[in-house]
View 1: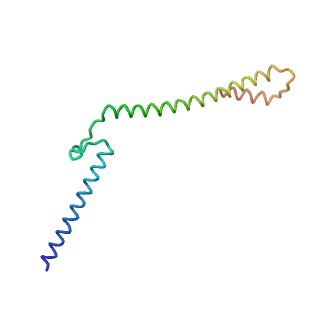
View 2 (view 1 turned 60 degrees about the horizontal axis):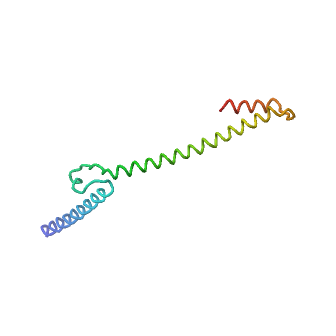
View 3 (view 1 turned 180 degrees about the horizontal axis):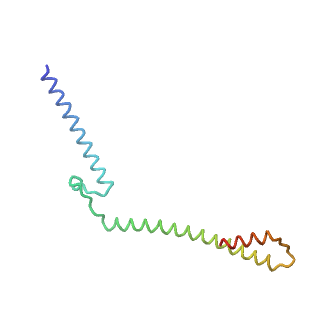
Length: 117
């Protein structure tokens, strides 16, 4: 009876090992498809070089992201410069208009704004 149970145990373990080997192979194939690794080189554990098309695609994606960031910076800069020039215009209007009354705190605020620029 012991011999029979040992054989059953061995067969069960062999089945589990085979299932694990199949799962390992599936994982290797998945890694190969996701990580640009050729199936032959998975066993050798060597990462292959990317093709020129993949390099160019990556460069194009990075360039597009950089262009988008640059455009956002341009928008912010343009908005800031518009605010600055509007403040300069208002300052000139205030200083040139003799009839307009400005107290010292308003002039101080304007000077503070322009000293930050």
